Length: 74
Image 1: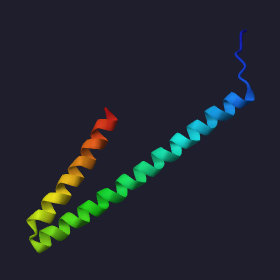
Image 2 (image 1 turned 60 degrees about the horizontal axis):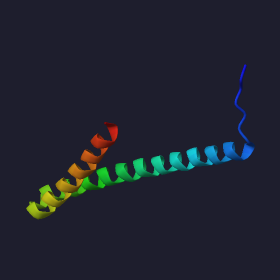
Image 3 (image 1 turned 90 degrees about the vertical axis):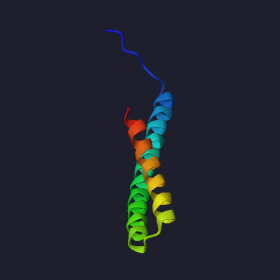
């Protein structure tokens, strides 16, 4: 029965690292969701205003955000 024992400091560093990564992931997901909603709202607004430039800009940004999500899942 060989059990590897880690010093307490190593475990604390590991737990802190996991917590930091979890916080970063949650923050990124929240920012992506906020931007997705913002871009969709701006696209709707552009359609109502018949503003092609604004529509193209926000559609491109939304597509980039969606492409990032797709690449992250691969």
